[in-house]
Length: 313
Image 1 (cartoon, rainbow, N blue to C red):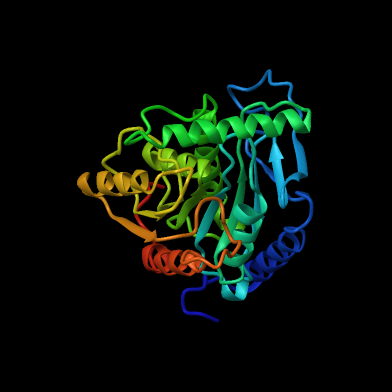
Image 2 (cartoon, rainbow, N blue to C red):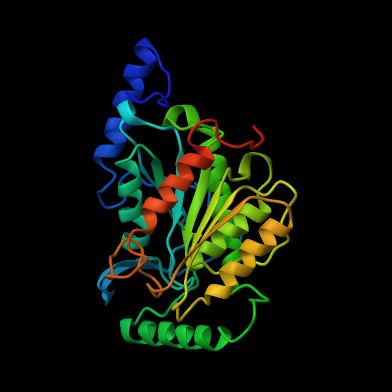
């Protein structure tokens, strides 16, 4: 057992082992162990009528769209190798869909296999048209607008009207994990988030808005759209990854976020790759960015691996 494992004794450890084994055994199933973040209905979207849809005919992997009910899906580390660190993984998709495999479950499984507890966040999205062809046209239009916006120095407004609700979902997720840290086998001082593309806006937004129990202990943004809220005095350590050939989210946006974070007196690490493009997640592209998650993992252990940071209880 590693020296950083949680120290539990007797019956409590045995009970936790059974609980984690049961949860982990279903983690790869079709959301059977999803944790509802707002059991009574998510505030601000109580009247939404769209129906959540999963599809594989849009990208060569599963995507979700029209999410109304935010959830967390846990991927819990083996108790014998549990670092206690918890990472909320926020997939991207321009707030039109979620790339829940290469930017969600595959990331979570990789981290889980190395002793990090991961939780894939399904956050609220813009409503998209039910017809698959019209949906694809919607997304094509979104990427066209994104390429035009890429000429700007820095985003001056949220990329979607639903962005604030998605950030609330992330803050709720952090609160949930901190309130249930003991039951889940995670450390209350080592709870943070990692976001991809639009998920980066969700995560940086949570890092800027989180206070007390909803404040993340660390935050990571992979080719992420930055949120533009004010950086708070208690901002957590930040990890920013960019690729110089990204056609959707200009690398300079990530560099600007990194510089602003450090100018405000906070810790930020910038990792830049010459190639890799956008949206790769865990899928190798024979590019310099292919091993990015190893670098994030080492940063994570250095940032939260021993004592965590100083989130309020």
